[in-house]
Image (spheres, rainbow, N blue to C red):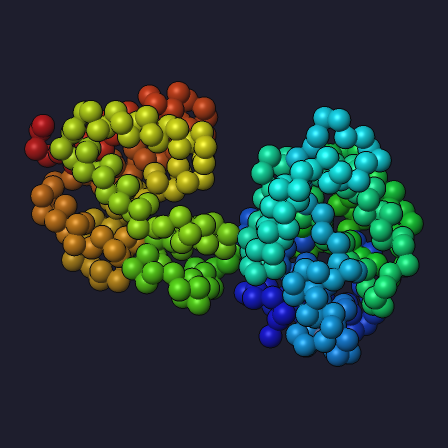
Length: 378
Ligand SMILES: [Zn+2]
């Protein structure tokens, strides 16, 4: 059992357990891997492993340290994360000095949510970087004598977002690390971290969740059964994405997919144009969600091929739309799935290459319409 609800990553857990057993805990770790793979949660778990008063590396969950760490309220656990940088802040200012009470409360709420679910990202509105004053503040605090015995653990989330001065300040700390302390950097983008930092950290890789692990996780989190296959595909091993799909009401997401396809099938030009507008707005605001809609359309055609062949309907990605897809196959028996799928792929490719988005979408919808009517010469 782990203190936080974490999945998989046994190799990393064993590695860290051994480090504690053999008293070979490093001053700095870099936990890296794709977004939502659990590196952040494991950083918190490691803090508990180091500080649990039960005397074993498996956190007991009941001692004083475990209880406080579980709520992220332990005085020897410091969390660092990207925050908005105020223009009038100077390098020695306390990092939250210029924040309003409402902003502070919002951050506290975000941290409480993180304690509930370590896969949730700490996303402070308008935060882009980890500024130098945040690192300086941590430096001050980690050199202070602490009220608690045990290890001081500093977790730096999204370490690739350290500003250059902040990264250099951090390197200074590593030159003379405070006693019995460890710094854990987490990142989904290791390539943009200063090589001098990477080389000083013990690096542990956290792979994305496998589809089976994701399935178990979704079932535990009461994801609607009919949507589990779709969420697994759209989230690609990222627990954070999977949760956000459940939270944003996956049924609405699926309805949108269906509405787009209906407009294309009957070629309702007004509604097609409306989707071009609304999807291009979505692309600006939430690129990930936008790409997921395109993938969702692609899965529709993939599923249509499965039903057309008479294969097992259990293999459908859109399990919730089985009846609609069956009707579609009957209404458009000559549809060209290859052309439809290629068109979606091309559209994603165009958008990645910054082709004018509305044009790319209109082109996609037109090609999809063509794909439905192939063989009918219409
Ligand atoms: Zn404990």
